[in-house]
Amino acid sequence: MSTVNPAEDKSRNDSSTPEKLMERLLKFEPADFPVLSLYLDARVDEHGHRNFSAFIRKQVTERAKTYPAQSRERQSVESDLSRILSYLDDNIDLTAQGIAIFACAAGNDFFDAGQFDAPFEQNQLFVFDRPQVYPLAHLVDQYRKYAVVLADTNRAQIFVFASGREVDRAELQNVKTKRSQAGGWSQSRYERHLENYHQQHVKEVVEVLNRTVQDEGIESVIIAGDEGTIIPLLRAEMSKELNDKVVDAISLGIDTPEHELLDESLKVFRQYDSLSDIEKVGKLFSEYRRDGLAVAGVPETLAALSNGQVEELLIAASAASITFDEAEVRKVLEAYETEATIGSGGEPSTTLDHNLVADEIVRRAQQLSSARVTFIEDATLLEQVGGVGALLRYRITPESAAPIEQPGVTSKSEALIEQRGA
Image (cartoon, rainbow, N blue to C red; front, side, top):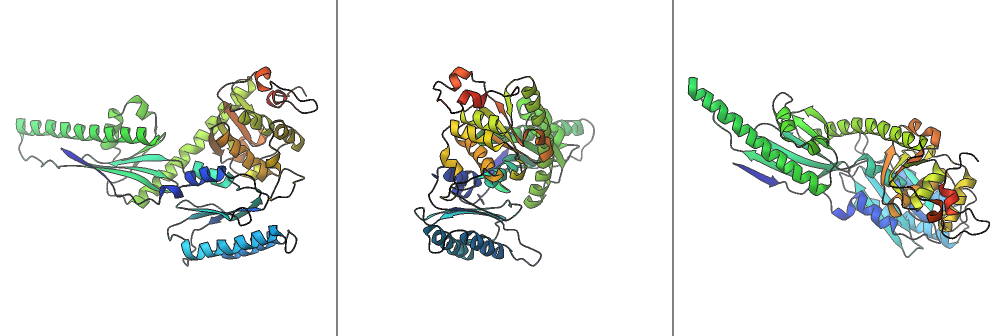
């Protein structure tokens, strides 16, 4: 009755996705030399030009000057600048909206890069002892994978979007039924036949959608089509589990171009995400107030992440919104033996700035807790707890948190347990 065709894969190589790039960067060990992390807004202006070259030259050159002349550190940064500019001259994809580049010439000639269909909102350069992954993690969360089913009573297309582009698509085409000109009983039989035909089509669409959701691990679905005909039919055929994943429905014609479908669905997804942020922060505070499965604030969240307790990390989308007591954060870092994270480009750091701490939080979420990382776009929602908190899988007793205590060092249990009375 129908045909189901996977569409031609138009995506870039899987190794270039932000998720794959993140995996590679998290394996990088802290270096004794400066590591450049460059994030570029690669969108073109009204004249079709990209405007990041002046930013790169100015910022990298100024950072290089902070190292002594003729030092290996300075030579490494200058070499990185040459390689970055060469890469951008020869390798930019015309469709790229955001570019991330990481380099350390003195560190075994390290160089890695990714080009994405989703933009970074601003140009940024970081110089630390390892790649700065916070902006990349933010991009991954902003453009999470979701599915869109665009259908009418005869055709359907099921898209999977992630990182601002299509990553998968399936098409269903049924043979159209000729409209009957007869009346009376013949017309009634035709209408019943047409209703059964539509029902079978919808059933097939939902079956393919359900397989797609399961195979791709999708948590959010958007329905698109005529809200008076196909959308109610799709809803009625879906299981409760699948219906619960539907975030919204939008009225669009079956011939809507893909780029328009992506734009419209992304708007809907962002609106849903904003409401979801409010609900998640509300749950965080509710659990935290009753001493339940939640922690709040930078020191407690770092400790919980280090113990592998965190189910979901909630963190402000702007690193500048992360606030903390430096002495308390240092106690946690020292208790969990993370001296390497305090350095920056081979030089000891006298302060822990918000970029370094935000990056450390995201790293621990990925590496030690395998936690979902959710960036809260409205900074005011987490402002009263320093811009970060976490929902936990379980709590740990002081005994299991710190089997070995070291005199003069804050124990893991002290870092973990809330110090409300202090």
